[in-house]
Image (cartoon, rainbow, N blue to C red; front, side):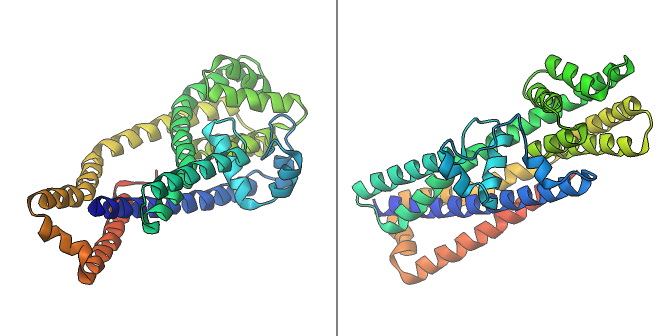
Length: 320
């Protein structure tokens, strides 16, 4: 039983540290995306982007709580993450779900007389778990949108060649395109119909999704509005460029499959080998958690494992 507790403690601590790192990276990425979009939106102010008459921008269904926490930049970061994941929840609901899960896990472990060194990391991991689910849904949803974007750009280009304006082409393609990209384009079209400019609607569109390919599309339209030219031809070329980027991403994913498999094997091998050795000779493995030197060795190995996982992650991930 003691061995199981120490094993759960180690796994919970590792996952909690990784989750905190991912949480911090997403918060930094959210702020950098906002700054980048505002800098490249050519005159669109941040206040104009936040004053949206179509979307529900509240962070809570409770009015006084919404007014109290809306100005917090971290709360705004969570709000953007929820919007990008496509989940229709408020920020306070996500925090409440994480709090309930954390309390439930802590109560269950306390009921079974687990040590606090196991209860605290497990409760922290349970509290962050809704954010991890949102991050997973956001990544999957963004992949679908990026796959749909080249066909949507070609459709917008053909609609403009047929005599439609950009706003009309966005409305037409939004009605014909499948979700989730179709829903986002319909949202942009509805915002323009409510009185926002095309520039503000597209800047909000880029900020809401945080995709590099969509940012290229928005920049192309905004630069075209300043310099002129054949926008339909520009969008057709951009669709071809995005298809080539997606093809390159797939090729890199195939070539890096061996590295990802090696990362999983090197991560799981110490746990599997340690468990097998414990089954064959428990007294030999018990030294690791029964003596101060063994505990120090486990801590050093945990730190080195985190460094190795981070290094492996940097090797197999590429910015295209």
